[in-house]
Amino acid sequence: MQGEYKGNLIFRERYVALNEEAIKDEINRLQKELYGMQEILEFVSKDNNTLKHQVIDGQENNERLMKELSNKVQKLQDSLDYSTPLKAQVADATADFKTKMEEVYISTSKKSGRSTKVLIIISIVNTLLLLGLIGLIGYSIL
Image (cartoon, rainbow, N blue to C red; front, side, top):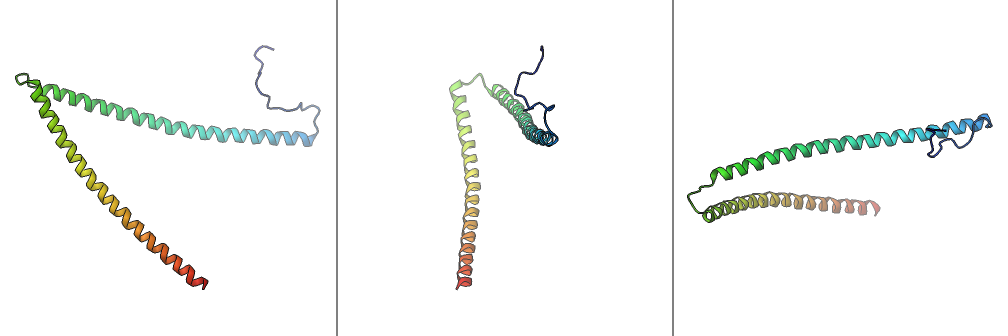
């Protein structure tokens, strides 16, 4: 027949010749397949929603970065002084960039140093608690 489904059949047997118990078993099997398909559909829809939100956030982030980049390029074009040599302007911009990168490096290293100290203190406390627990377990055994 034209337009007939040619994929895997979900019906294993013809229902005309089945007894009542076999029909009930087939209905239960089909219901389990249906519930499984519903669970898969819900799982995929949740993944799709998270992916959509990630794509939207990424697009917003890209738009913001493009605006910032265009603003910086415009500032650079505006700040170019055509009366002085380009080599001197590049040297000034490079020196300014280096100082800003050093400031960022210093502030980042201070933050990571604090974070490292906190992690060390937490690990020391955890070690002391673990040793105390081992001592209590040993005491309760003896």
